Figure: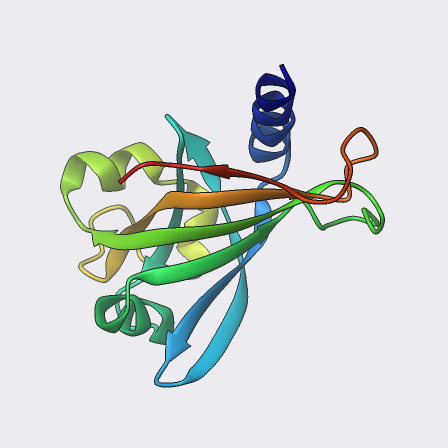
Length: 143
């Protein structure tokens, strides 16, 4: 029963919170940046320019870490720590699906050759700071 409740709380945070920190590794140093995420079918997606350091980092090391749920004065409330495997996608169908006009601040349009979608497949999601559970609770996903 607890696992079902944990999964429900995790899905709630994944669907209600879109801004999170994406961390990648460059050599032996972690680098984090704020990103806008979209949750669909148990995967997280975000967009980027192919020219960014994060894309190069992911191409060299697909392991990423995401913090989600810490925004707008949410200190002390539940949030997620996610370890995931990231992949870079540039197929037209995926780019069209995730395109939003607000991205024009960074890209020329959905056909911009530098526009890529980053897909993050969770390996582990830890639910943190939840009042109904004794300490962090983790859900592990199979490969």
